[in-house]
Length: 268
Image (cartoon, rainbow, N blue to C red):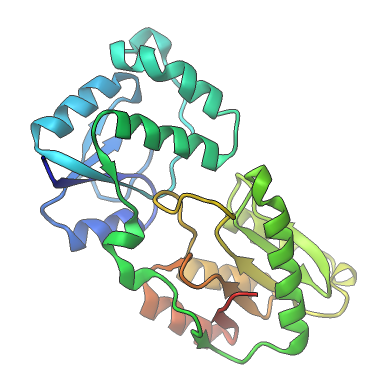
């Protein structure tokens, strides 16, 4: 059975890290969906899924990792090949759902073609945050109460497939991560009037959705996340151990120290 790895590269640092760790892997991308591999990738049109599958099989690919931020592209139905015609109704229906619903459908389509979908965290286990990780000033009791409240909010929203992050200050929810992403949410929080923050700084919590398939869209934080948390005036961030990745770990941890915010991996 073919076992060569392919990286389906989308946006962000994760595909770059995977490509460096697995230089022998086939690198593919989708036209119209940005990736950061600097052109070192074979691009395929989403409308021509059959061509993509054939190319992967011809190169002996048996495993594939979907890495990075997968945007929801527009389709040109007039360009569909036979494979895309067959799966388009399922994909279009899934696009009306949350990210988990869409990505679950994508996984199923690849598996039906005989590919094994693996998670980036399985290939790069050193990226996964370990329980007990603590950098920066220790969170206060008030910070931990806010973090617990944010954790509860994310748990309640998990069945609705909404987001992986929330900000709470003084028990008040200031932001919930939605399709716009973490940076947009934290910019919004930064603009929140002081009187709504109840005189405290607040905490950002990042966690996987309950029941989420971690082979795709596993939550991740990096130096930009830390900078955005500090820019929003928050005390720090709490991430779920074992289910959140830290990209560019040394740079991320140093960024927290430099900004005077905490980064803590703990279950709440």
